[in-house]
Each structure stands twice: as C-alpha cells, then as structure tokens.
Length: 140
Image (cartoon, rainbow, N blue to C red; front, top):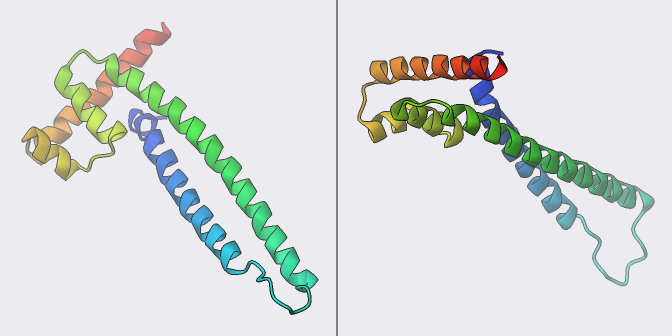
C-alpha cells in the first residue's frame, strides 16, 4: 500500500458509508410507501408480505454494514491522525489534515493556504514522504 492509499482509506470508507446511508434511506422510504393501510379490505396477499419481509431484512443487513463502516472509519481516521501528528513540520501536517481528514479539495486548500497548485503538490509530496519515514521509524 502506498502512502497515498494509506491516507485515502478514510475518504473511501466515508464515501461508501454515505452511499449505504442513501440506500438505507431509499429502502426505508419504499417500505413506508408500501406498508399496508388499515381498511375494510381483506388482508394483503402473501406476496406483499414477503416483499416487505425482504425489505426489512435488507434494511437490517444494511444497518449492520453501516455500523461496521462507522467503527472502521473511526479506527482508520485515528491511524491517519497519528501519522499526521508524527510529522514535525506544521505546514506539511496541515496539508495532510485538510486533504485526508477534512476531505478538502485541492482548490480549497490552495485558497486557504494561499499557495499555487504546483507548490502545494510539491509540499504534499514532501508530506507523504514524511509519513512513510515516520511509519518506517515506528516499525524499527
């Protein structure tokens, strides 16, 4: 795993988590829309009940996946934070913090720090090399 892949793990988990939450919201809205109404009409058919049961199972499975993703995200963010905190250069750690923990775009980081794109990319490269250096020192 490269430094960049190590640092991007939180972003990827967060993106997956948001997608699952959107899917959960969609499933809940579908089950609410198809819930039986109390009327004088005879009971719903077994087919409708079966579909509702399947939807409920999907919702439960998705909720369990979301809980796991939330735990994973917390662990990964902590690992990334520790790696960033190990860098002694404040500018380099700030760039990594903004990019990999705050999920800021390059344009937002450039505006915030008042750096041009090429210089920001150069600093970012230095910061990633500093992360790997600290990780190597930690292991030895």
